[in-house]
Image (cartoon, rainbow, N blue to C red; front, side, top):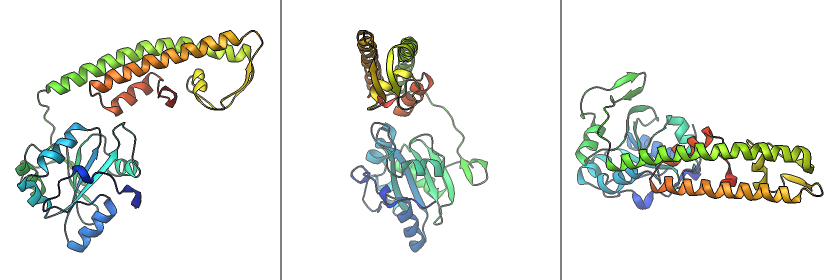
Length: 275
């Protein structure tokens, strides 16, 4: 898969330099690997990922890691911004390597064939160096070219516990907001059918989302129905404020943006009008 030059990402300030010369797009990394007859070490990461920052600030700069990375072509590919949105070229990387957790670390040959993969962090530069060298423990399990280390869950950290509790609270709030949204959706759909003189342009998962789309509501309320229209708009804005508060609480608990997005989709609360 040929990836755009636009994938030259903003990872540079966070990535250790030292003896390792980092590349920030995959095509350049592969070209360099072919010219230098080296393998490619790929760090797929996001700006919102705490473990990703830990690798870049505490592991990659160590002398052991830096020496090991100098023997390969290290590529740092940031795929999502702090708010969880895909960066240019990021979706292509996620799909190409079927990444669904961060950080995902890959070792490729010079032609881009995956040799090994690790999801999560290394706890020392020595561990990273051993992994690159292929001397880091028992054989991988898996099929075909995709080799995976057996997963052994560890004890949740305090941050993990806070995040898990925050996610549960966030889902509870979304379930409550969704029930209110169901009622508002019914009321707004009835209003459009009986008291709206005009049409609605576009299709929306919930009818009242049209309130937040420029040009979606074409027309005006029937005479005498203006007050009801204002009341429905007020209820929608109130619901938006409640969801924003739930979002802020979830962010403070460090609930991952992707998890929040999935939960909103589950309760039909995923719409840009909430922003």
